[in-house]
Amino acid sequence: MLEAIRLWLDAIRRNHALEHATVAVLLARRGPTRLAGRATAGGFVIIADIDGAEVAGAAHEALRRLRAGEASLATSPLCGTTIAVGAGLCALAATLVLATGSPWTRLPNAFTAAALASVAGQPAGRWVQQHVTTLADHGEVEIVGVRTLLGRVHRVETRGPAGR
Image (cartoon, rainbow, N blue to C red; front, side, top):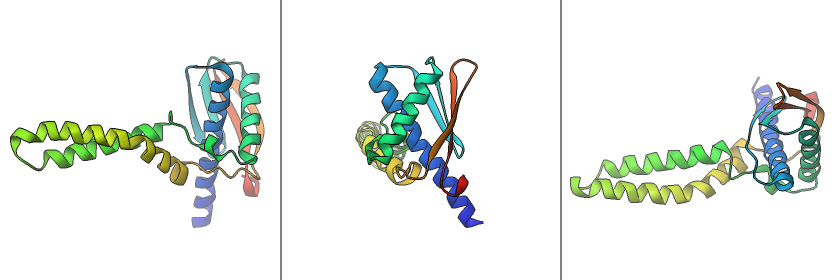
C-alpha cells in the first residue's frame, strides 16, 4: 500500500517537473505568454492560447532536456509552490512578531519581518520544489499523447516507471 502511494506521488512529482520544463521551453520560444499548468499522476495540463502541436513539441523537447540532465528546468519561479511558501513564511513571520514586543513596535516589526520573509520565499520555494514537489529523474517517462480540449486546454499524457 505504501509503495503504491509512493509511486503515485513520484508520478505527480515527475509530471510537475515536466510541466515546468514544458512551460520554460514555451516561454523561451514565445516570450511572455499567459498560461497555467497543473500536474497529475497521468500527465499534466497546460491552459493557454497556444496551438496543441506547439505544446506537444515543447513537451517532447522538455522531456529530452530533462533526460539529458537539465534538472534546473524542473523548478520554476512562477510555480504556485513558490508563491505558497513565500506567503506562508510572510504570515508566520508577521504572526510571530505581532505576538511579542511592545504595542508600539509590533506593527512596524511585523512589516519588517514579513518583508524579510518575502525575500526568503523565493529560494525557500525553489528548495521545496526541488526536494518535495518535483522530481527531475525522467529516464523511464514517456509522453503517450497530447490532446487539446476546448481549444486552449492541452492535456499531455505520460507513462512512467512500472507502466504508470
